[in-house]
Figure 1 (cartoon, rainbow, N blue to C red):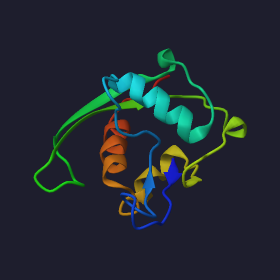
Figure 2 (cartoon, rainbow, N blue to C red):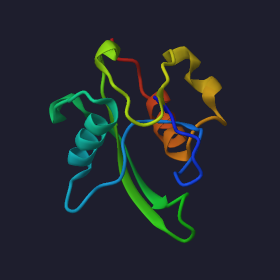
Figure 3 (cartoon, rainbow, N blue to C red):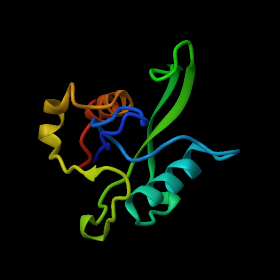
Figure 4 (cartoon, rainbow, N blue to C red):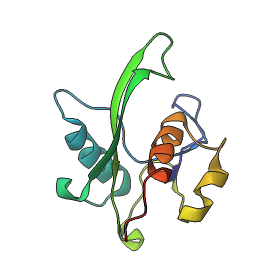
Length: 123
């Protein structure tokens, strides 16, 4: 996860969020997340590493009367020692501590973590 920079011109300043972002041009959601994650962590993860775990279609929390569509992806086993975070600061949280972050999360991260926490553990 990432602690967003505390700058007034960015969305959710100072909040904890996930890596990712908005699509550019005709990108698919998968192409977008591959590009954004690479830009934000300095480590390339190929598309096949991303698992689609949810979709969102509804109000855009950041734009009054706006609508938003998005997809939520999960990637496992990312080597932390290989990352160069280019925006904000890296935040590492154990799975059993995720629920304590409520209130500190950016809205998209709240939504994505709700999806993640409802999943059955993979054994």
